Length: 439
Image (cartoon, rainbow, N blue to C red; front, side, top):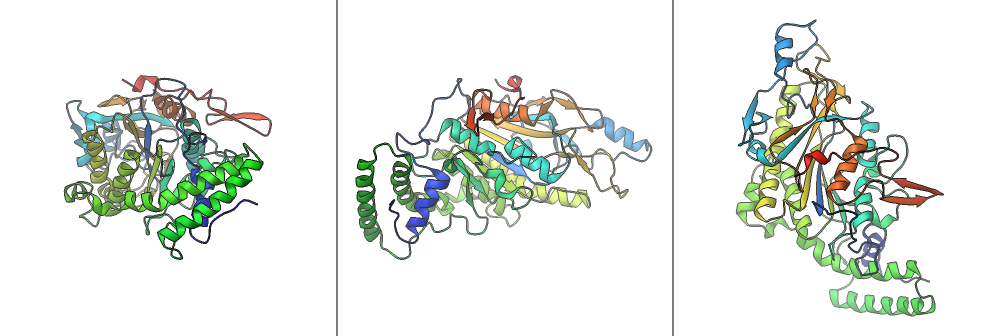
């Protein structure tokens, strides 16, 4: 019988086995050699739930403004915010992102994005897993499966305050990949992992308990050498014990200088929530966590587009700019691929006739990347003159995933897992990396 420790630590060890794995040299989560020369080592993905309007943020459409002003059948809605050229590159970015505009020369705007389905559920799950219809591993899980993690006492994949709708846990789950590759969820309110502390035993008593349990497990392993379940539990117990110290220290933002806390907007009610996520993400990649996902809600603007989009931008603008600047200052930006985007974009037309509304648009939208060997200060791809569909430099969902894997040195066609008699991959039977976005 496998031995697990008492309440608190036992749950954490099980969590470490199921969700984080272990970091011993024989562990599946030990760092692995990539297929190609990598440009990036880590990923920070900022998911904007709801589908932000590309036309009013990162896809400058002066022709749409002209057509709307001429009243072309009364259908078109002009960009509701003005655009400003930023940095030495002159990258056009909406006025609602002034702080991010100051980092324009690090941004690669992906203006030719495209996905298949304009429904939130299908598009969100497809973005995260590569399939809108079937339960598949999240792309964060694929990355950790392919590369392992440098973190010795933290999870390899962390998701902060993820959505509970539109696929929920599917968006950070491992599906048929071993459970050790799934994302570890950190809640928005408690800013930590459940049961991280043991309230029943002192640290010294807990250490004695662990030694006793590990001694019993190693005796069992001696009778069944190479048993992966026993080896995994032994390693998970040790990682869980480390996590009880490392996780609270990593998530304790009070250890940051006041200057850094202000940089991320932790001194403002509007920016504290997302600023906390961004600062936590920087601390995690600094510790070697392979994949960190942040989530910001409220980008489904069928009504009150101007007010609600400006409000959402205010909440994330300063923290995002701080994250890029802070990574740069710490020599982490070259090794960290930062990704921003939602599940799709918005329509060029006025959905409800209010001159303040846009519907869903899957045929063309924008995301952006920074760091990780990506060219800065450039626009890659384009939508039509009115922004309703991608027409050049098109990056569909499998292409996006292939591109992210390519940045990390992984060949999407070689990153496979055999399940139920078939070799599966994140990009299924398609996908082409957009190699032109890299230096």
